[in-house]
Image (cartoon, rainbow, N blue to C red; front, side):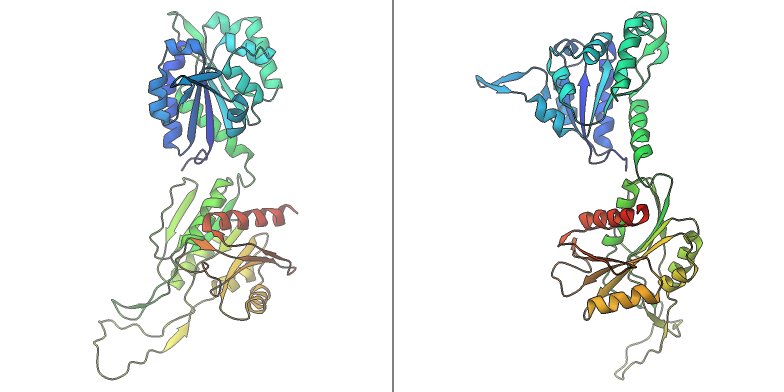
Length: 403
């Protein structure tokens, strides 16, 4: 999954031959999970049709300050468009548009929206080599970057004039990579590694039966996604789960038993800055595992259980600079039990949720948690989607490690 997933992108297109590349650019943004709206200058329609772009973006294309539908004039609100976007990209950015942007010459919808935008603005120049090297163009480029806009430099290559030189708009994939890398560079966990555990563990009774629990792994997977969206490289150690991850920053390590999860956690723990252990690890396992399927009989069956290794406590005993977070799923004396676990396992924080809370716990899409730090300060969150809960948890962790 790209860091552009879920982003609202406003694409401004001006009248340059490179406008034909914007069809590919829109497709790449949509494929990354972004939502795209397009604003075209009137003259840019000579190079690519609004129909093509509206089909690819699945949104109407804006070009003028108002449009007519069934003889009713509708205002295209440039202020709303500017406020809607998480980022704005102007590509191709011609010499004419660059000059208007730098001087504030507001004579079309695109420039009006640019002047109203509150989000980061990227621009990809495209023109012939002499125009690109002209002092007036250089002045425009310098002024726009001084304003805080981010230039995606033109490249050298064959130009529409037939000449070869600098001025060719960057290729769509390179434009997308530039924006992704720029966003990643600003994320708070860029360059840090995070360990997350998720799901249940299964402890074999015989070749076909096991001791397990109802954990789906959803909470842990959402925490892993939230950490990756903050720029972290994530080691997601998960027991059996149907959940999926599609972020390239997440490395999934599949395990089955508590022993396997223990070994995986200790393998990666020394590399990470943060560890969030949300897996529902079995506390006990059969002392002996039958080598053949146990046949059903009319008599009772007794299975002797032995404790599994305590992963949280073992990591708490060896942690150095890592910020270690555990989970406590309780059914009674919730706060008391959570505080006891926080202290006994040497955690930096613990996430408490109760099976008494409707909509919280295993196999649901929602959760209700309390974040408790090592000073026993409590932050209570209302019932939310597990996606939102994961974001809350990661934000609380960021607040603690940055304090």
